Length: 75
Image (cartoon, rainbow, N blue to C red):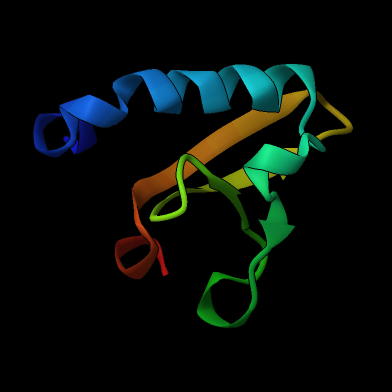
């Protein structure tokens, strides 16, 4: 699991989740759609190095997380 490798990011991860729930457009999330093999997914930042790849349905207020990891691991 992600937190076993990166326990220091737990607080930042949950802060990002809270921001996604409250305001997906918050600038610190750097939320953007992905392209190529990950088209249809979005990416949100946990930190400059770590990202969350996710499916995002704002119309139905539903967020489905697909992957969490470093920039290289997610993409």
